[in-house]
Each structure stands twice: as structure tokens, then as C-alpha cells.
View 1 (cartoon, rainbow, N blue to C red):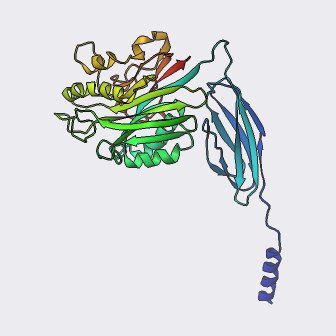
View 2: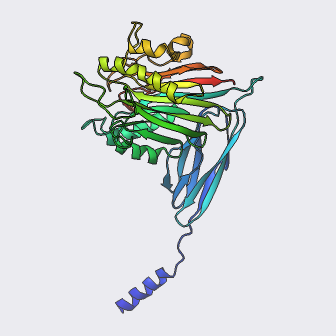
View 3: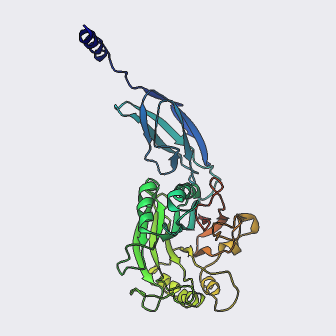
Length: 383
């Protein structure tokens, strides 16, 4: 009798319909203003779900969730006068979906010739694996670094100290927003570990004329050209032409990670100018960015003096009112106001000018994203 009753109960349970998955989101449409801001989406569901968007100019607070929740959408500044739109897709495991439509207004047209503003910067990411314990080990720090990179909202930027592990991470975590190109001076082919690189906003630019070189009299041959009491290193740079699709602006950018030994730094400095002239034959607006491992100096023969005889330093050409953040870009994980300015964005050319300078000393949960602060300059192009 017991088995008959148990079978009847199980048969009765098995005959019930499974609960249908449901999902809805409020609001259905979001009207975002042109400036950067956050918007909340309230999810009502009885299931597990994912959320995604193909737009590179917004960031979602999470990629998945379950049941009722709130998803925050960070929408980055629209620097153009034309509005833009994006779809945010929510989907359950069973295939139920819900789409939120987001539109962002363009910036106010101030009349006259419309200018294009591009944010060009540099960021030493700190090589993964260097820190073995504490808050700054890669496994703990990488989420802070991601938040920092997204908050910077670069259009184009140079990066330094990019390990193979970090390259994989960048290509995975930020591929929706940026395209990266890397150069390792420790390989004749330019590929591999201990790299530097250039990142640019995905879909907004076309890359051409990619080159790399070593900062020496034999630029196409790998060599140890940074030697001395601070250690022995191979140093060089990478460069390319980037064409901004919506405005037609073309620019030339060089990224470097400067020599740590001061004598080597001075000896290598003229070669970056040589390579700029070698590869920027069209005389495009030129930007030289990087962790240059040098201090500002008016002394003749110093690396800073050599570079600023060719490029200009926006930190000095802009009024103090147009600069924000600390002067020092190196924080060493312990100087919240920065210690030394060794990260630079230099420029030269016609038809554009710097509008503002920022050394971003933001901390995340009271902790550093890197031992360097990111630096950027907003440039306005009028021709």
C-alpha cells in the first residue's frame, strides 16, 4: 500500500506544469542627457537572466542576475551634436527576452564650425605578477583597474607594462569598448610579454600604418638600450595613424615606456623624434604619450628639454584653471597626491588645441588601481 501511495504522489507531482519564466524591465525607454550619467533599470523576474549591449559608449553594472534586481547603466559623454541610440537586451535561460531602448542626446551646438573633441591619454597599468601579496595583487587589483579604465573614457591612449596575462584580460574585459594593439620590445617580432600598446575606441577609428621600433641608432633591431644601476631593459616605441570616422580627423600617435636609467633615457630621447619624422610623413597632428620615466627640467640636454623642443607639453601651455588632479602621476601605491610627474601627453601640429588636462587620482574602495595615475588631455579639432 505504501509504494502504491508513493507512486500516486510522485505521479501527481510530475503532472504539474513547470513555472513559466518571466522578465520585464522598467523603464522601457531611457532618454539620457549628453553628459556622463548613471541610469537605473528595475528588473522584475522569476528566473536567472543575462543583460548585454553592443554599444561601446555605455557600461552595465553586471552581466547577469536572477529574480528581481536593479541594473545600473553608466552612459558616457556624447561629444558630438548628433544623438545616438542603443538597445539593452535582457534574456532568460529559456529564451524569454526584454529589450530596453536607450537614446542619448548630442551635445549642444554652440554655432559656427562644429569642433571634434578627442580625449588622448596614457596609463601605466603595472605589470601583473609583480605584487605577490596584499591589496595590490593582480587578482584583487584588476577589477579596480577595469573601473578606472572605463571611468577615464579615453578616445585614444597609450598603455605600458602590459604582460601577456594583462593583454588577454584587456582583450576580454574591455573588447566591447576598445581595440588594442601591442608591442613587446623583448621580441624581434614585437609580440609577447612585457609589452606596451595603443588603445582606441572601438568602431570610432580606423587604424593604419602600424609600426614599432627600438630607441637606438638601429631602430629595427632589438637591443638592450637601457642599462645601468637601475637594471638592464629593452626600450622602444610603437606608433600608428588613426582616422576618426565621424569627423574625418586623422592623427599620428607614438607610445613609449622610457628608459629607467637617466643616461640611457637622455641618449634614447632623440630617436623618438627621428621615428616621428620617419613615420609621420604627412605631417598629421602628432601625439607622443607614455610613462617616460623622466622629470620636468629646463636644463639643456635633459630628456624633457629634448622632447619639448619638438612637441609641446599641455600641462604648461594650458592655464592652471584648465588643469585638474595632482601634478604627480606616479603614486607608488602610497602617495594619494602623486609623487612625481613622469607620465606625459605631448602634442604638435595645426588645426587643434588642448582644452583641459587631467591627472586622475581616483581611488576605488580607498585603493589604487595602479602605481601610476592615468593622465589625459581633451583636444579640440576645428579643421
